[in-house]
Length: 167
Image (cartoon, rainbow, N blue to C red):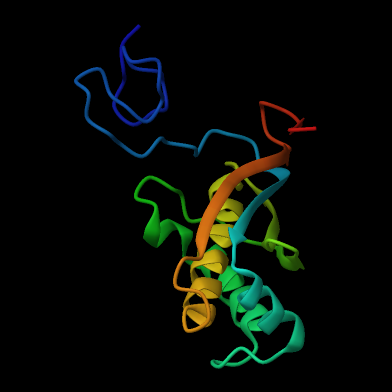
């Protein structure tokens, strides 16, 4: 099997984004059907007890860290094609970014919806990653050792590959 330009036909590598010569390209999705699609991603920011206490008490020195992280995640969804080189620009119809303060940090979950020709998993992952980065920026005065972990797709629906969930 060989790659045929940017048609999305799988190259010798077995990956649609890689041509037979090994070069990356953006797959042509113009012939794909528009379908409703949704993806959810999750991640966690591990924090010290002092940072968790500051979040719960609402006294993080920089302000409302949870609100800032949520807005950053939403903004990131809209900028995904600018950040991820082979991601297609697609219309985002809805997004939610939720953050929950837990005993050892903050759990983050993003869900993104569209009706388009390609998946929306990268947008959900980007939302979680950027929300986590913004949260770290907000709490770094309280916790210099904050750590992002477990960023992953947890569910997707729509498209040719159908529905999937990690549970």
